[in-house]
Length: 148
Image 1 (cartoon, rainbow, N blue to C red):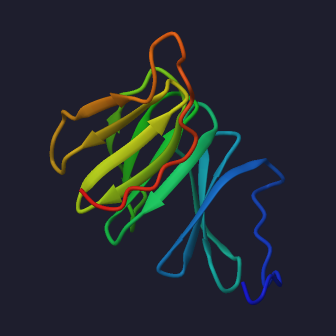
Image 2 (tube, helix red, strand yellow; image 1 turned 60 degrees about the vertical axis):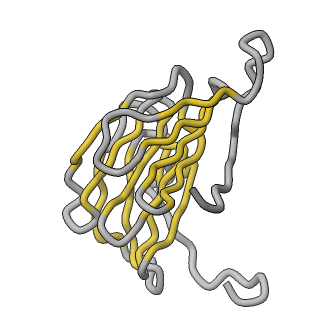
């Protein structure tokens, strides 16, 4: 975007898009049907679409090798960014996954269940931190991890 002017519009078969992330010239959009669409950031031309989840995709994060998705189905999936083949599936939250970020290889996720989860690289185990008491159960809708 240049000074608030839209330079391109991305369509996803007229399905509600819940999240968008750009990485290395590709825009990844997660939609209501559980799909991820990859499009060229300059032209808007769709390069591929995959059905990633059984429910809406609420967040995406991309790095040089991997694409991470979080969904209303409470799961996180990790895809090879070149082939879009699913490599791993995690269910670490009891509510929809609302945000994802990867810092120094550690995957951080947040959820409507009021927790933030961190998983070190190449680990099947991580740490959960609840952001309030169980009675309060505040949703965590967004997060920003600065460093580990």
